[in-house]
Length: 478
Image 1 (cartoon, rainbow, N blue to C red):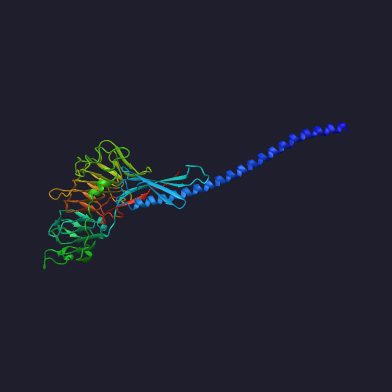
Image 2: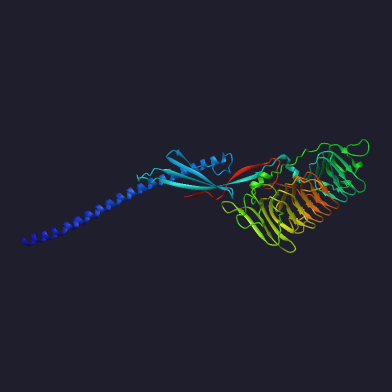
């Protein structure tokens, strides 16, 4: 009995520590479960707050864009000031920073909600950034069909003269009078249209508008043909005017405005937006005024260059580059560019790309100069792939010229000028010409090239407008 009592006391002494250990382990397990459950609850609350903060940031970004879109001048860097708005569940603070060289806004919006876990001074926030580029675009109008013509804006009483042996195979619109000299001709075809607001005078020899076998599609002459009885009179085949359709009512096309001030400010590259990478020899201007102050611009110098302007995402929005070659180098163009001085071109080059180039002064091609969309300067040129529009801001009139094609020179593209256009002996133009008056000399040949969508910066009947473009892939959340 004594031995059993001692044995029982010994086992009791061992059970107590064991029971205490089990109790402690159980308490630790319960504590862990409680902590885990509380942690999950806190994280769930924080996650919901995080989603709410992001939603508020998005709302703030929408407000920032709304403010920018309603700005009187979206190029004004104060257009999107820092603003905090109170929304359901929290606040949103937005602002914008404008980068003038690339005309790009960086908009920032931060959503903020109360921390659900009670952490003092530590609200839950989410931030969103996005970029918006400001651009200037041409506005198309009904009169933009003018870019399918050779067009002279001189009024009635002023004669456009076609000299000996010159050949026109492009739709021709003469606001005033047309005087055709010996052996000059307007070729027939379904794409050929002749419109003369005043009178049409046809000289001796082989001078003709179309032929009996190949008629001009439409002939519209407001005051009729001169000579004969009565004088003037409606044009007929007796006047050597062969057409499928005759009319005395012209389309009333008018010359689009040349907006030098706008494109001086908004060209890429240009006086206000220089090359982001690379450079152009001599730059685009010599001062900060649009005053034709720069010396003669050489687009194809002896050495190569590559001038690019990039947007906020690194995309090219404007480029002009030159790679010399033999027999012809390559001029690469993209966008709208402006030179505050005359352009004097004397090279031989093939251009690649689609662009509008402005000169505040005159543009001239030297003797034998060629600038074409294909090396052969022939009918294989595809204007939908490569198209260059040259705009001369000069108002020079005869005996001076705002745009000159020297003897034997060739240009494939479209041209427009404030003053007169002079195409000398054996020169050739493929595309539209819009001028005050056209002077086309002996043996000059003009080819028809149908014109499609206006290029950025190209003078348009509707003028220009400032637009805002959201940069793709620029919406970044933090």
